[in-house]
Length: 220
View 1 (cartoon, rainbow, N blue to C red):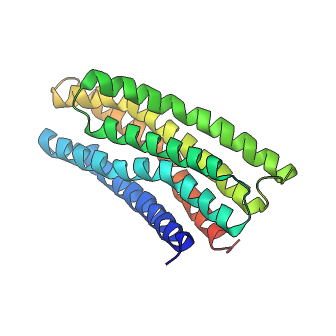
View 2 (view 1 turned 90 degrees about the vertical axis):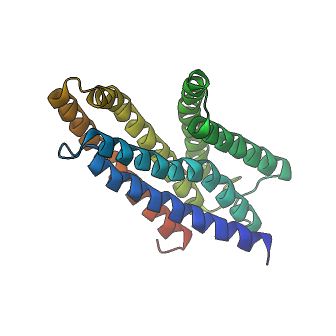
């Protein structure tokens, strides 16, 4: 068993984990917004949704370092051991942040960490996308163009995730009102509207993941 095969194994698992749990999140959302269900049933559905949503949040920080590390072993990406170490270190810190937000008990701390997690993403998108586009024209560090395409798609996935978080930020107060028995009809309408507005981002994530898988196995 080589390091490359171990990385390949985990890279494939991350793809499956991301896509599978994202579909689970989508499916459970239908029960969250179903007005025919009782408030406790919908609250349970939301807990299932949040549990499923941890899958994509965990896969996102790890999918790039496993892929870049594999590409460096293949010789299609030139990166030093220090660069790989920094990449893995940053990814593991991001993963720790995600887990802290999900499992933390201090609500004030979780709120602050969510803000940090939110703003980390556009910074990553900007840096990675600029580097990937540059490498398409000047292939000094990324030799194979398909690696740049995969990185750009991951950047798009991160942006789609931010779009979903924005919509759910408006969704949450409506759900709280519903649980408290306030403005039930209005809350149901807001929740359905916001979930509907998430759908283009959700479908975009699925398509992006499938495209990246196709690039990874050289189907395209």
